[in-house]
Length: 127
Image (cartoon, rainbow, N blue to C red; front, side, top):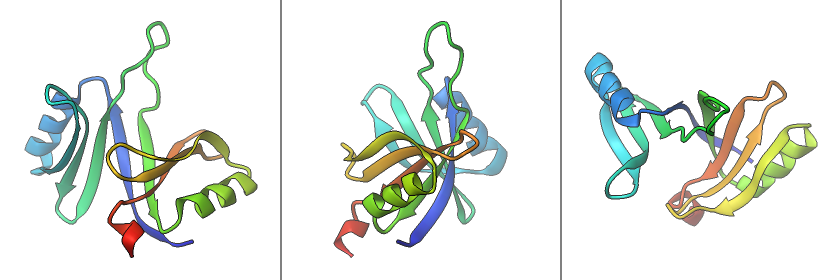
């Protein structure tokens, strides 16, 4: 199992505001959007040679905001990475599953409780 890339994902209740901030503050460019025609749920920004994801935090009424940041590792085999994560003592949030945007993803937490996504890009599955 090899890691292909890594990028952070910030979570926010005001996605348009935070995207606009990074566009103006660091000259970020939108590389990808996912959501409904009326509202983005996720935006990927390119800042120089780096990538930053920003996702909508829907929050839970009465519980405040959830995670503020997550990590996303693209791996060459999500299922193997998931098994290794579990064997190493990591917590499981969601088992590997095929997502509507074409990627296979598992959601886990490290020993400190940080949210981590293990993903395989749709284009990588044909490698």
